[in-house]
Image (cartoon, helix red, strand yellow):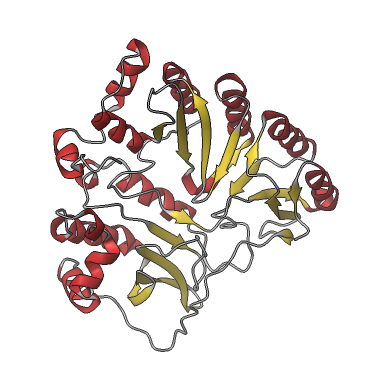
Length: 362
């Protein structure tokens, strides 16, 4: 970003919800894009690769990190047709296409829309898509499947005009493990499941990794809303380097932040000294693992090359279809997990994956 651009002025002039028409305008008329609009285009995952704006990069965040067979086929098509036969898996559960022409973006957006993917709010001062554990829902050691909660968080906050102009980004993580998941960095706000009793699950609330109390699952949305409103109203907007949520909380003081948070909620954060807090985040497991679904396994693979051509991607698709697997997840370190492998096929499938650079024996 140019030091001459005032981001607060940029956000006030036009919301990140209102720039799609501008993207289509430049795609159709091929005019040189002003520096201010180039900055706004990053909110939709669009980055100019050169000063002449000859080529562009498109980054797409994946909801819960998941891709099904139909989506894999579509991104392979985009790679072949628009991106010099190249696709990158990125950290934070994103995919990336390079060497795109801006005139191709409308068609690419239409393909993505058909498979329920988009690049909207890839960056910017908003609430980002919630990060979850890549093996959520398939790991039998998990306390709670958080998929529906994660979807509700995304539906409530991603693209919500009330939270489209924060001082900086707000990143949330949600985990079905009491220790949380290793997402590669410290989330601003995280919720980790905990077993309160035989029949009751509660969630640990963590601000920058520090436990501040427990809430019920039904209170996660309201707690997130309160945290975001505090940050929106009181965060630093004058100096970019002091605008982060981390700086805001440390400057205010965690105790003061928690007092404000509780004053904005109609419930108290619960304390429970009997619940031990495991502070070592759970890492995704490589290799063949037993699934929570009977007669199924999941396979974690380290990818030798994070940049894939369509041949490798098509080979992956063909192998998955041959062995009746339909869903994969990109991990926070840009590796891959095959979620739904019939156990009878797992060992053979793992060997086939290794032949194309997806190694489960690490």
